[in-house]
Image (cartoon, rainbow, N blue to C red; front, side, top):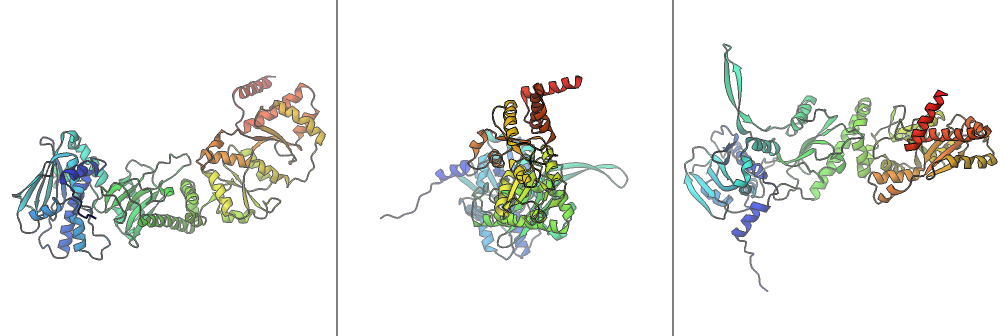
Length: 623
């Protein structure tokens, strides 16, 4: 057996770091600015514990572009490096000075403020550069030095006259990356990745005019600070007002002009560190369910707006920012890695949201009801996808009846438990999904004393099945379903005025006028004020088709199944008696008009049949 060490050649690993470590070229600016922030944070830390006794002075990080020289410069006044530290931290690939510093100065603070971890960020500079210089001078009493490398494993390191402590990285931009010499490009990258870094970042200057004491206008040049070093989520919620959260929302989403419904401030330090603020936007049923509105940060550095795993899927429609040093990232800090912490964070966020909603419901139910329609889709999505969230949400999720009164499902169950049962004692929950399309059915149900819920979200077919699995001895029936007729039939005490012989005689006449496929004639003994001709669809088949259209697993073939409608004939209506008594062509015309009206009420009268009906109706008006 032979043992030994794997030999990694610098000539082989450098191109991998340069070309494949990072997925996007633009990441270089985030990494280099983050390194500058780390250098500054280290100096502030040493100053706070007395290991640096000098004047901190201006700690701004400065970004500058020289188009003529084709260079980008990132300059800080942080801790700096000695020549020996350059050899240690720069020439040894993946030796993280940040990680070493944290270990050395470990304390009880929940967050050291140090961003770096892997020691590879600096090498992202070669993705856009043909040559890189490091001009640096340590805060210790030592000479400055100049490190230079052209993207090969060879480098030079020399003494260098530098007045101030700190480090300046100079990138000599390669010909295939000249776009990064544009101010607009650098500005957009700084806004994307560095907007909330904890040290002020300067990029260029701003000019403005002010009047002096004598009223004379003078020009003032100010540093253009591109970031907010102390963002709202890092502050204590007790020190913030509603206006502060609204202002921060506009800062993060400057092009979203509609204010959110409410916010949730996250502030956790055990068993993991997590801060942030989430906003509930208004969600309409027709909304484009566009996610990726929540931004993930790690120590105030933007990582991604794809937070799958960290935020429960149903909360992906929220807006806001989450910041945690405990979220595991890949080496390039561009993607998440799954571990137990991620699952814990996801569960905590779900609970935090439900706790907030429960409190809002209990503190001011009227206000909660006024917001419900704008947020119900998120809550209902959560109830479908998360069992724990369903159990918590059942306390505050609301469902209006068709008169506009809101109920929790428990409250509604109490209201109908004695009045809406089938022959087996099962409670029947009647609901409408479209107030306008199902208006006539709603009126008929209410006329008979039934309560009708309005369940009109786009995922209601799935949610109804969830309710039936959770609510004992329940059955949900849409008002235009054939099942409701069986329920209504129990309330009818009047005997049918049609004999079986009359039904047998009438049925083929009706079938002759009906569309050839998809309809079944059913005679029902209904109250005399109920519609003479009405159309229903099987509750079971309708649900199957609806679920297939909204992503019901394994049901895609149901979309191609033909519709199966019932034409319900109310045997107690006076129109039926009139049809029986009418002779000749008039009988067929009455049947045709009655069927057309029933079809029209369900938007099933189309094409040539609709045109003919309209033309005939106009002709009748003329005669």
